[in-house]
Image (tube, rainbow, N blue to C red; front, side):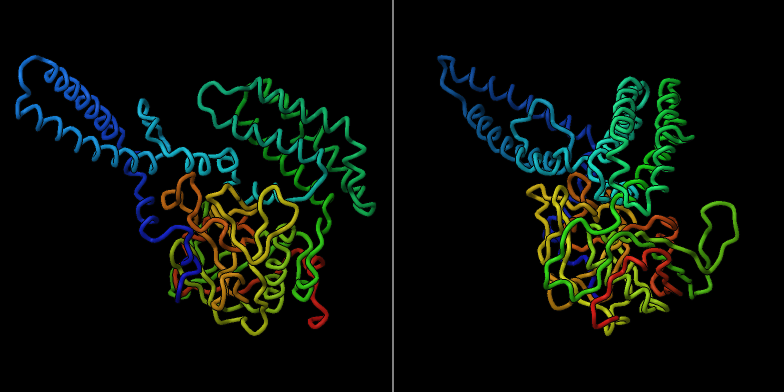
Length: 451
């Protein structure tokens, strides 16, 4: 069976080439040696030129040396250019040989801040009140500041929290006004928790003043979780209109949660994450996102409700765990490829993103446990009616900037949020014992022929 990841954005030769970039990154002595060699060559060349300036006739040896120097310089230039492409670490003193256009795209600020966890990607994908998004951005910056080793910039963190706290208090009316009337009470409770709760902004500010990074990290996670809950109340449906021709497909107008029970059939067992009994079955939960991929998530949710994945075999291949391509074909829809670019209001259909030009998706594939639909076996402009895969992102096998070579090529519609530790234990032949839509069925809209 062909892998759904076969249509890489790079050719196979370049994929192999860039997967070896770690060799150069981890061999700084080699790079230093290259630079030192060039320096020595330049010195010898200068000496040779001085020799030719003397009144005596140039010797055969000096002429041969100059010719050899030119040939060797050309060879070393090729090696350095390849090294510069394959590694993000600059060769100081030789910046003129760098490939700046590629570096500008693959190391743009947008690439560096691409969500690297499912939780972060899902939180950023919520179309919510602009004040809440400003608060969220300010707090997410603290996550990056906490990664700084040794002396952490607690002063900057304090400023970020004070900014968030000011917006939360000054714009309280606007924040609560964005919540539907039937959800106002729940929203008020969450707002109070955000500002004054045990894991709220005031408490976070205190932990930062105490310069306690562990407590700051735990409280920050709680605060961001509260923000996500508030934003979900502010965004009860789609923030854009679907094209008329796509209303014939099922659609998910918000979030849903699918719980898989996977089972080993070879007599082995899944290892528990912590102390516990090893079992032949394990649970995996996936949050599916209709805000960014309503058609893809809708078709998948309908298949789950119809029981199409119950008893389905799994296959492991090419950094992915694939579902069987046959089961469910009769009940699934071959929906168009659906990818929402970052910064855009609505998804693009039947087209991939140009990562080389800086286009990045709201729901990136370059996250461990990302869930996406395989391509249709008829056309890459459509997703498979039923075949999906868990993507096992591995930075060691990624391109420059840590992006998957297949980024922007598939309809990603969700992320594994529970049971990520189970994914690497799944082997070819294991089965999905059951798949259930445990949350979000009220947001699943079916076309008239399916009602």
